[in-house]
Image 1 (cartoon, rainbow over the protein chains, first blue to last red):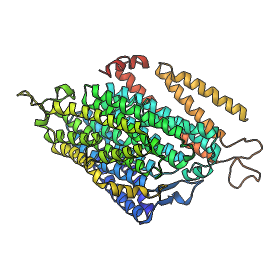
Image 2: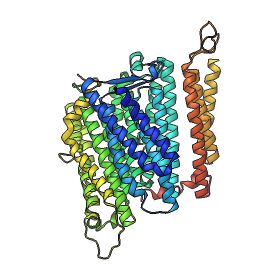
Image 3: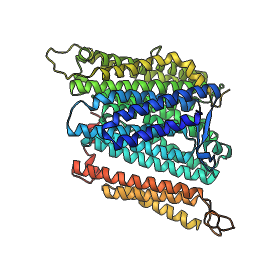
Image 4: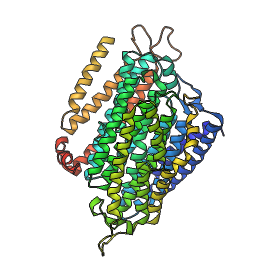
Length: 486
Length: 117
């Protein structure tokens, strides 16, 4: 078994399972478990291959670039594949009892379409992380957008449909902008392979326009301030497992593509001015998202605005990638933050789903007593909050520390200041939820029971988010593979 | 040919933008169809001037051929565009059944104020 097999398995495994889950609706959960097994083995093997033998690549059906499609797995891709697998498995475990809660026609309908869509989403993400071909990335991006919009529309009525339509319009326009950029890049470089583009790119007006189009589209997909407006309604109106997937993975897919574009395909355009623009937008996202999170009255909207804020930290990294160590510290910090945030966000949305189920609402002001009936979920919410705020030894702390020290070393004190203010605001909105949740309830409050697995999945992910800080050096070692650092 | 194609792409983009900015669902839908066709045309135009070149068919013709890769790319893009259209039609139809309106302004009228409260 060569790495090519594992890369094929990562894309084909969930794809075949999705087709089967759609054909045999009653076997949806089984198919998701089978796909999780295949992907789990493939990711583990690929991590071993990358750590042992460097970047693995495969030419699909023997046609290499520039004509064919290359799959390449380096440290960054493998890390994100593993993160996707972890979160998808957790969501699978959570969604099974979540979807079975009531036996109505709507619930059966939801369950029928949830599993194929989850598996298509997983396929799209795996394909996105593995391909190095701008056009194939467009195909993966469209598949990802479709699966995500359909998942948001799963409820089939009211606010969910409206949020889904808005999301679809944004997603479609963004993909078309990206496609226009790809066309212009092909016109200039006569190739769509990332590595070849990097070799042939000459700074000029055509490539500048191409990069601006692609970046604009991807920023809308990644919900960077000020193009984040579609995110809160879409994430807040989706079912809990879907919100978790969208917040943890889908927006990160577009961010990943931006990393590939700016640091691998067209690094010639990463000038101080562009870096500063990204840094400014990131800083604005942190402040705007945190302040909005603080003023929300519903828990899911609070978490969704907090996602907007957290995405800002990732874009701050662009302005810090100019250091003498080649920006490796900032790079590791941002990706560690991405991983810890993805786990913490999933844990929060899953815990919010539990609260919604138990109490029947997610109004923050009426959450009193929830910690007594759902102690595990409340604990998960708190632990995820610890990672969001960035208290040691959580992954959030390690990531922020690396970003902060990179910012101070480069003399970009304003970035550091924004990180600290953002952390304070995060602490404020987390404490706002926690103080309500731990207030004793008035006696006689009726709550619906929540299956234990739903509570423990949330807690497990929160623990991963906190524990990720301890695995920082291993992650840095992985990230070095295939990167431009010695 | 190049100038005409460029002009056509520009006109299509202008029409698409105008249509997408309308309130009616059907106009927005047409806008997206036109937009995806404009993008496809841009992809096609990247194969360069076709004057004096032959169609890229294996085993035929001896002279210089048109670059076949953009044609392969737009084939995929057309299929995706078709999927997008079908998807959009179904979602708009479901919204119409659910909300009894085909006007985007009406659809989001209350949401823009209630979101922040």
